[in-house]
Length: 283
Ligand code: CAA
Image 1 (cartoon, protein in one colour):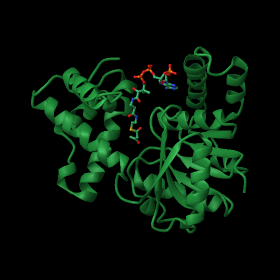
Image 2 (cartoon, helix red, strand yellow):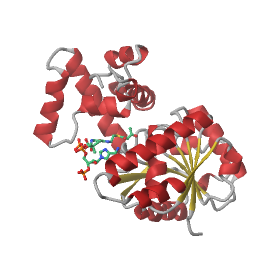
Image 3 (cartoon, protein in one colour):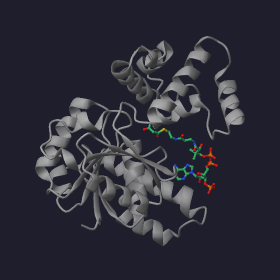
């Protein structure tokens, strides 16, 4: 089975970045979300990103950008959107019930050889697959924000994921010019478990007044050569995302993963980071 057509479900920051990346590498993408208006806005922002980060920097031509955009179709009906695809990538809100329900629906809708992938950043792939019949075709394909830029894809093998699906997903991920690591299923996998601890601890330091947000970030950037400090990163990923990850890791792995009280307060006050223009910094 040669992958030509891909369905991406969920047009948030990750879903739209994944759609842009995949279309850039020559695949046709059906991007699905619940509202046509939102999908149009997202396609417009993909167009702006292509112009700003690729055409303006002479990385691709205007014509190539147009071709990439033309490969992205918008659809509010997932039944139609998954008809002729060889892989579905889910990037909806991080909620286990929602994902279990969606995967069971996709499992019924899609032909047996279609790969069903989740871009979850922390939830167990084995659990996401629990309500589906063909659990061997369900896998985690974890992209990083901004998806068109970041070099890694973390593949997560659920307890019931077949080796064949892992291999096909690896080849697909490599065709997107990414380096792949394959990990066994465990809450937060490798990357999220590590980065969450760093960001949460940075928030604890900030809360205790040990250093300003800017100094914590500068310290990490210059001491460890990080491209971004942990508080800037939390704002980029979304403080709500890290809060939910923390709650899940605490539930699954123990109290040491408890999110900082400040993170909870910020989420409750709508200080989610870049997407609300206010978090640890103003945008
Ligand atoms: N799309 C395409 N290209 C982009 C881009 C975007 N959204 N944002 C930046 N770039 C490109 C720029 O054009 C620039 O390219 P050139 O070097 O060729 O000119 C390059 O990236 C560097 O950009 P900038 O100079 O503007 O800024 P920067 O050096 O600070 O890089 C960054 C921006 C790539 C975001 C960098 O700061 C970075 O890597 N930050 C860390 C991001 C990170 O850790 N992401 C993972 C988060 S965890 C996650 O996503 C997983 C999860 O599930 C929670």
